Image (cartoon, rainbow, N blue to C red; front, side):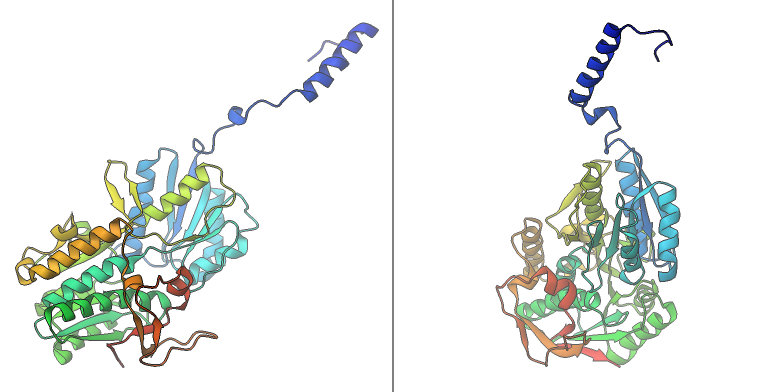
Length: 416
């Protein structure tokens, strides 16, 4: 500050001139403020279910922890068992504590975040996609191309079945479930053609994502009444795996390497799983946030060709075959491996390599034909049985796969 004293006219003129020059001079570079990549970033996930004992939220929780380990300035924050009416208040609590990216890990409780996106313009909000694809400038929609790994699982399941009956314990019909199941069914059907086998695929719905007793009852029915000798699931509890272990049938896992991560059962029962690395997509969001991007990518649908490097140097694709800590063909159970014909193993390796390189996709390669069952959406009824919804060799659009895949694949039996 200037000392208070009488100024001469000359001194006063010098001060005015210096102020004018200062105002006109270029401003210093923004490096005086902390760079976005150096600032503390809260990465928050709202889990729709409990974390412990689930593959979906368990894998998402692992993603948050892996991002915190990779970036010294990232703090993983979370709430679990979040209902739709809790989504906004929990988000605002975590934003007050420093959250800069807030994820709703299921659409039904993630969509309310869209309503506060404008209120917090410097926060990225994220909701996993079920079928709604609406976005805002800072409201991102995300889903991994899990169906790619599910297709590979289907090849193995089709090779393993001896009764010719494969069962799927599922949650309820929605685009996400129908698309993922179709990827698995497509792999089973390709294996059946290659091996000249007749295979039935039975799907029965529990009614929700996490209903352990109902899931157990369905799995038991599939084995006892429908002679299923390979079980998989589109639900979140470990009940289907428990039944497979007790009944001595093969289990094909979803969302996470349950043997390697949780120690659930062993490779005498778990023939194969796929592992979802949600952190790959979340890492893309973090990189954009750290770069100060005010207009992030709002639809993210990465596949096996998209990778990230973890803190320990491991490079992981978005999804991959995984079982007991091993990946690719090595993930196939040692007990199951001798039961799988070489032509199936060769095809699994070939297709996995191609998808890792972004050169092949089952939904592009194959004709997609409706079973006539599924879920009527507003303005989009289930296509009649036998309808060719997409021709072979034509790339399926992101909009179709994420928002319009409302039918079962031809050849699927839906049990009441």
